[in-house]
Length: 104
Image 1 (cartoon, rainbow, N blue to C red):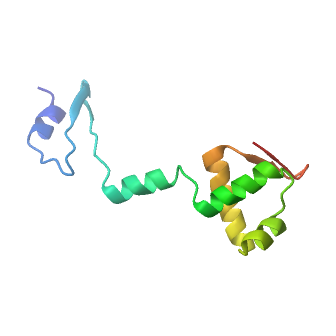
Image 2: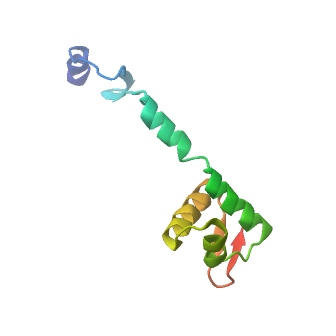
């Protein structure tokens, strides 16, 4: 038995993960996420109500400006840019600075 396999036989496994022999002396371990991490991962793939409202505004007007969003939702410039970043990540939308338009 390879030395690594022997070592793993005597190790205590935490977090419910159990190593599986992958190849020769290479092991794979799957550690389940805790609820907080799972919720956080799920949250990062969905838009909040405000982000969804901004996305809907973009869909209605591809020339939407930061100032329009700030005025409509009464939020700061920094918040708009933070929401834009999340919208881009989740939806794949892109903003072209040269033409000042959104591509959906």
